[in-house]
Amino acid sequence: MRINHFNSIQNNPYKNQVQNMKHEKVQSGYKKDEIQISDEAKKLLSSSKFESDRAEKITEIKSLVDKGTYKVNVSETAKSIINFWQKG
Image (tube, helix red, strand yellow):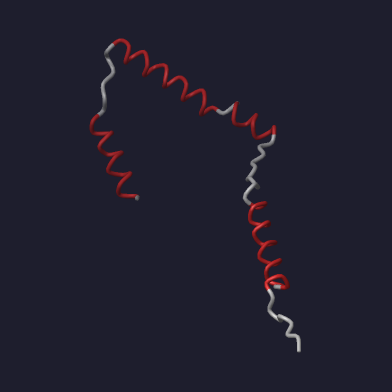
């Protein structure tokens, strides 16, 4: 009498399923998120009044630091730090 192996390793139906899952995980690791900003949004960002105001303020502070006349407003700095930590 001959006995056939019913649960043979070579005929394991779950083995192919596990290999397919591993292959899918590897492929999904290569996907990357992408962000696309429209040309109109880029124009709005570049023509922002905020940018020009910020640039003016930076040049003003740089000139004061170079001259040695820049003064730190201690009370405003302390208020800003306290407000930051109270919100968090």
